[in-house]
Image (cartoon, rainbow, N blue to C red; front, side, top):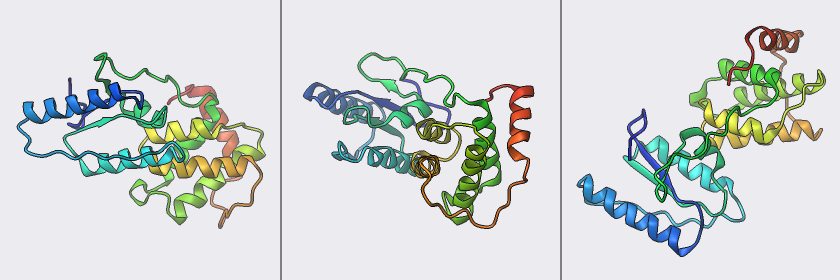
Length: 208
């Protein structure tokens, strides 16, 4: 099982049945033995009611730079983590399926790229990054550019934000799309920003 570019071995086994759990334990013991590790940690977290907890936990483990992670999700509760890292299925030896392009609207992609460029990713979804995100989503909505919050979540998780922050951004996108009241702060985006995104998308195509 190969390590990824950041040196962390990531794998998974879908399902919450006994066979998946046994496969996970077997993998843990094998990895620890092969790498001469004297200890390992097992997290037991039932997340059927709040799937975001699984993504947040894995994102935290990634920040800790552990040598390896083996996830056995409760149902399909870690789609962003699997899309971002394409971990190896310990039962088949194959990487998780490539989800392809995360966002179907290329103008939305340009908006998300602008948001990411303006943000300090080290600060997560702080006040500045939050209001910038709201302004991006409001600009898209007012200009008739549709966005899918789930696609926003997947794109952000794969492009530097991490799973926990991506969940927060997707929630903001969902609130804007639903017409809920959001704090937009002092407006900092140029008036023709969506026109610029459209031109970028037309000239450069979709870059995810």
